[in-house]
Length: 134
Image (cartoon, rainbow, N blue to C red):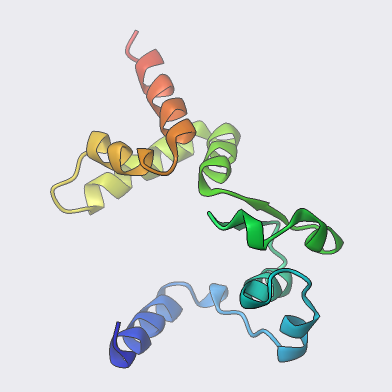
C-alpha cells in the first residue's frame, strides 16, 4: 500500500468511526510488558479500555502481561463464538447484511470464507440456521 492510499484509508476510517481513534502516549507503549513489536497494540487497548484483543498472534500477548489491565487475548474464532453466544440473532442479522453488502456474495459464500479461520463460529451459525429449518 502506498502512503497516499494509507492516508486515504485512515481518513475514511476516521470519518466512519471517529470514536475508534485513540491517542496513545509513548510512555504507555513503553510500559507494556508483552512482545516489544506489539506493545503499541496493548497500549491502544489499555487507552481504549478494551476487554479483549483479538488476534491470530496469541504468542505475543501472553495472559500474564495483560492481567493488570483486565484484558484478555482471544483468537478471532473464539471472539466470534462469544459474540454469537451473547446474541445469535444479532450476529445472524449482521452476517446476512454483510453478505448483501459484498459484491456477488451470499451468506453461504461468506460463511465459506469465514470458515477458513473461524471454523467453530461457522459451525455454530450453520447449526442455528439448520435448526430454524426444521
